[in-house]
Amino acid sequence: RRGGRGGLPPAGGLAAAEQAPVACLVLRDGGDVGEELAAALKKLVHEAHGETCVPTEFVPISAIPRTYNSKPMRQVVAQLFAGNFHGDVSEIGNPGCLSQLRSTIADWRGMRAMPVLDERP
Image 1 (cartoon, one colour):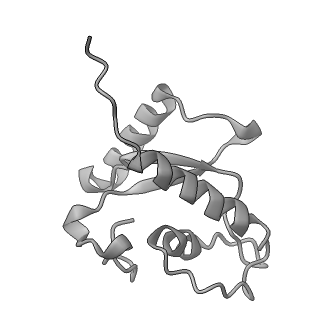
Image 2 (image 1 turned 135 degrees about the vertical axis):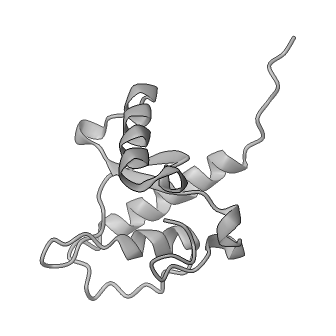
């Protein structure tokens, strides 16, 4: 989601216009998001929600936090990405997934911070 929409604050203090949507996916058997799957998902999102909602990246995660009634807690994932999760796990039915999710987000941030090397000879 973009900052400023759905009550979410801008991640990292960036204006909404400087942000891009990212999608978290729980894949069966720890699969990977290949180019074919990414393209198909981007097409589905574009058709259903428009160009501005198409994720620029897909982040595979092991589980999404859920309430005790098994409803997904998307706001917790958004808060973790934004760096403003306050740690209240009283409503989370599977709080054990938070440490893995934090680690995955940290790894994703680290990969984004790495410089892209020019491979020209």
